[in-house]
Length: 123
Image (tube, rainbow, N blue to C red; front, side):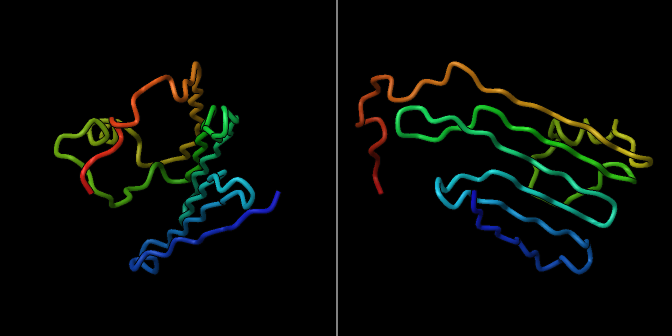
């Protein structure tokens, strides 16, 4: 399989040392992997797909993290008093943080008879 690898460069990359690469399947145009690395570790998200009718849809997503100094603070838009902020306060910011999260999708339905008019709106 051939991939297009897209490197995402932040204007603040020099300060954070962060590097993000997105791996796109060149034949199906699906995102197969996203790798985010910083000086203290990396996270990698992999997407596995199944073909349902004419569509490639994710059936499993795997996130693996490996940070030597705990989960780093990564600036991004958040909502006030978000669930994430509450969780982050309970996560150690020191020591190794390794883990794996697997999300599996099932009973995927495509084109189940919804009227096309539902998807036509003002442009």
